[in-house]
Image (cartoon, rainbow, N blue to C red; front, side, top):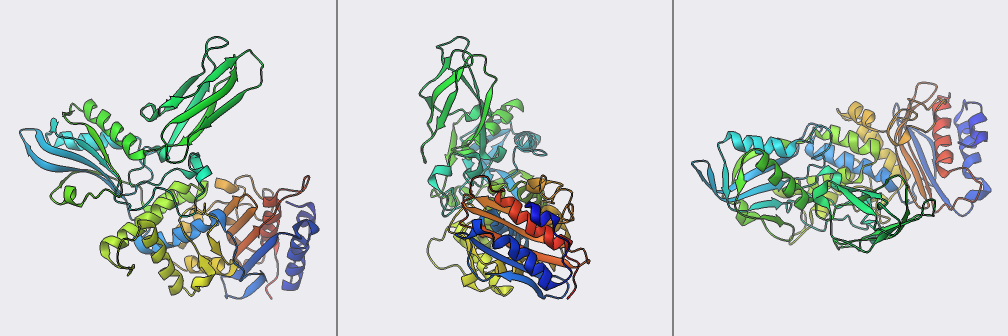
Length: 488
């Protein structure tokens, strides 16, 4: 936070608040950048402050608020996403003659805390039905989502990274593989690479070489977009502690299928066939036409998925929720998507556009193309963001959503922000940042007890050397709102 803003006495009038905020945004180092700010009272609807509030801005991860809104509106806060085992065949005397289908329907939490035993749960339910043998293939089916596994506008260079994992109807362990690199046992030997989960180990080419102790390290891990092979090259010094990295899984459904196959074996169920994976644009309709449900596990309630996703700004969770909305509306044929093929993501965005129209946001003010905020094609005005926040604050689930947002100085992505200020444990907001983009949008209660919704958006800012972090300037404006004592 800027020192001047931290030392500012609380404003007691809107004019005073305006002067304080303008003192921040008018600094010379922002001359080539663009600020967009809107602040509205939730108590009476009046505007307390606006600065280019109708200009389209890149929202980064604050776009997750739009996904939260459409998923809550369409699916409801208590909706739970199923993952199912189905039989395409008959069961006699403990033997299934036909395929066993593991069908994902978008749960992003499989394999995480509270769901680490998902495969054993399914295998246990299958064993309880007396099934001991599968005379057929195990099919891991993630074709419930139709369309590419990456969001519209995601950058190719991000797709091997842990923050841009593929969205999948059959996700597991957040679609991340953890890589541990250790030096070899002697100088000149290859480094050792371990993968977790172990069944996600890819083909590895190239060589990381062990160099003498205290030599500078140079570890490089690269996977071309759309390829499964991991190239590992460079050096690691002997006696170096293990180095840990996170990469995107290339085929989450395949890993889920492998984990289920292992669980079936643990429960004494043998499979004579092979593991196959069914991806879009392959069609599972014929396969599912006569399939019977044998077992099912359910995700946590949607509001809990949102809480996990918003607190950590977890891109997979929010993208999967948008796709879940699209798949749900497609199944019900409720959102009047155009005829012909329409991706699940497009259907989800169509449902979002309908919601925005319902709450009075013009289509030209909200141009969201995916669910996580990773795309630079996403554009929204601060006024549209604040109108969305006001709508959410009036819903029956408003308090649960507010608690799902990061809390300044307390948790999530804001745990280290605005401590020892009036904003601590007061500001509930979603942050968003990418190169040249810094945003914060959410709620705060002023010192006068007025409930406010705000959107603070800074775009096209290249921070000069020695200048405060851009997040400090954004935070400083939120602190001014928390300190505000006016009621005019």
